[in-house]
Length: 453
Ligand SMILES: NC(=O)c1ccc[n+]([C@@H]2O[C@H](COP(=O)([O-])OP(=O)(O)OC[C@H]3O[C@@H](n4cnc5c(N)ncnc54)[C@H](OP(=O)(O)O)[C@@H]3O)[C@@H](O)[C@H]2O)c1
Image 1 (cartoon, protein in one colour):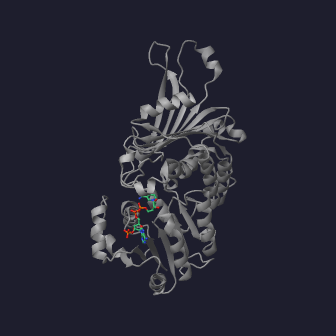
Image 2 (cartoon, rainbow, N blue to C red; image 1 turned 180 degrees about the vertical axis):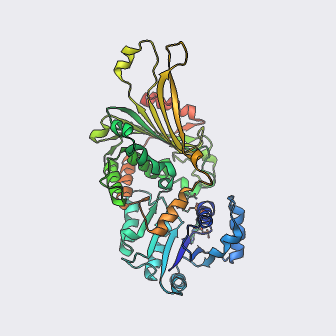
Image 3 (cartoon, rainbow, N blue to C red; image 1 turned 90 degrees about the horizontal axis):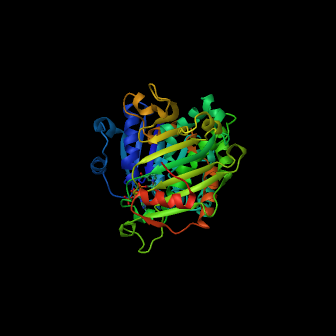
């Protein structure tokens, strides 16, 4: 059967920067179904040649265009025009039944119009496993808008046909969290409040908002990063062992944890980088946060009294995304080695860059000294992989094609995350202005008493 991947928003940044390079990489690895066509849908009046010349200017990755071009077609249509969807139908059925995948790489306010068009033109019928539809984050702007989008979608599609992207879930090390946890008895036995003192979930960026002021100024770091990526990471770290490692087993446990997240009024700190107000398309007196630090407690027996700290922001000192688990110190250690400084054990799951796992433990200093020194066991996941490592979008597209939705988020996960975020908006503090991460570390120390190394 022929496979069509139709991308709405094919003239946008996501298509050029992520989707086209990922599709080209899948093709180069021979992972696409044999008879695949990518329909690049846009409202601009392009020929395939003019579309490709724009795409080539935008795409930095090395692509074998000679091989890739025959896969692509440009399809011009207006989103509000039902005839456009009817033409799509004719195209997709011209050689008989086909697999039809629709990727909405557009802002959420266009979701209802496109979903309606797809439904009215009968491009996806309920219960038909050959039709699937993908939505990019952000899925809504708050609980109410997300619920409205979702009920609209359920009018048209089955839950099994809806794929909600959180591209963090396609990253190698995110998928590795469950393996590190559950395939290592050492960690699984100590993955609880008896052994763990704190968990820190980090997604730091060095860039500002670039030219995305229109989008970012009414979203902010809390909705852009915490609602999706950081909540998902926390859920994977904190969930109980699932009954099975299939789609529903994992999602069910993630939702249970998300429902138990508590964030108290004084446990949120926000910041805005100096210069944000001079960016394009920002309100003159915008209070949008470009940085968030918050303390979440997870109300389950496993995580009693263990703080989960979330840190995310723009224009920070480094680009780094990782999860740190600091272990408690054993009180006997000080009796055994009085006057010796013993570092806490620390497990770091590095998501990007330099994917891997580091575990800090204490050893005796080499030679005649009796000093104790920390050393790091470092596993570099990247280094072991020969060839180009798969990007998150490659994995997600491949799963979409094969109909595996494990790495996409189910509605109840999104709904619960939005409830948590809406709750924070009841008391979100005004952002402090920062020029660098040092300012923020100082503020975190005064408000939370926590020192971040
Ligand atoms: N860029 C990323 O890396 C990234 C990552 C994760 C999620 N996302 C999400 O993905 C979505 C798209 O992001 P983006 O960065 O690609 O945005 P973008 O560069 O602004 O592109 C938006 C696309 O939507 C089309 N569009 C806008 N208004 C339209 C209308 N009224 N009718 C028809 N087409 C319209 C644009 O077409 P024209 O060219 O004709 O205007 C363009 O193709 C957003 O929701 C974003 O939050 C993006």
